[in-house]
Length: 417
Image 1 (tube, rainbow, N blue to C red):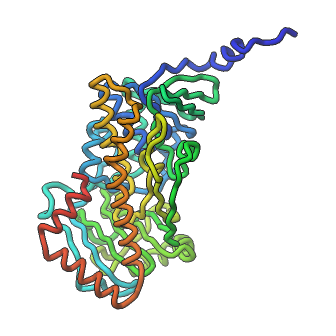
Image 2 (cartoon, rainbow, N blue to C red; image 1 turned 120 degrees about the vertical axis):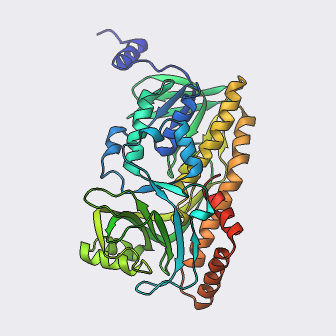
Image 3 (spheres, helix red, strand yellow; image 1 turned 120 degrees about the horizontal axis):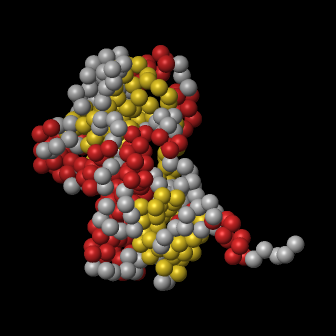
């Protein structure tokens, strides 16, 4: 039998797949951050390829992810500009009040509290969006927006050089890009391959995430109730015909106990939730749907750049969910990156030039490190039961409550404005 030529093998491998055209930007990871970046760049004429090892349609299944995201005002504007917000299949519920309290399970919350109200902002503090709804909207935009090539499921090997990057797919196809963006999560393979050091912080906490129905309306109000084992958050969601009053909860507890709480029968689980509310403002609680558990930790990359490579979202940083800013921080990365890339593209500049990469790191990393330090300090300050520390922090949050200008400054920063 005659030997088969390399070109014949290549043709056979790629015959069932159309060739991939060269692009300006290749994004590895089609999650909310990577997918939103692809859409935002593409609507302005930048050619994008987005690669993910997983198929995108299965991510739309209700059991895939139990989270609901609190989307701040700045990220909401990004999603609108990317064409994603308008195609959300489920309504987003506004957050118009946030009550911050301190206490112990089974006891009334401290009389010293902090409340952000409608008077502190000219628009909602955020909007609650189910993870599945965001995924459905993302998938729709990724597959219908011109200038985007979706490669999923697909595995890619990235070879970066000073003059560009070569992306080789497992099916034999390859293409070139000026810039590669790592949006491949906390365990980023691209970050590891680039030799970028990573620092991790453990909290010894696990988050229980689920939905609850309740007897009384939430009036678009959220709760952050600090407890010795970890913070407990209630976030208002749009109701359904079956459950007109509905909220998401993020309940952080010690690793050894969280799974046991999550596995409780509905009636016992509801009782434990009620014990952690600090008040009966929502009345009787009923668990809705599945419960998920997520171990909590923080981490940060020592740098965000390498040759022709940028890190965004969880590949660059991960923080404690105590302030609900994790995804918003990733969106802020791509707000800044989009601005930099769109400006460079309009001027005909090289999108992978070292000066451009340095500009992105200088703009994002210091602010992200401040947010990581703030959430880390908040968790360590509030996740304990020392009487003196409890008194000091209660006086502190009550002090912020008494100064409208200070409240508004907190709100403006958290909203990403």
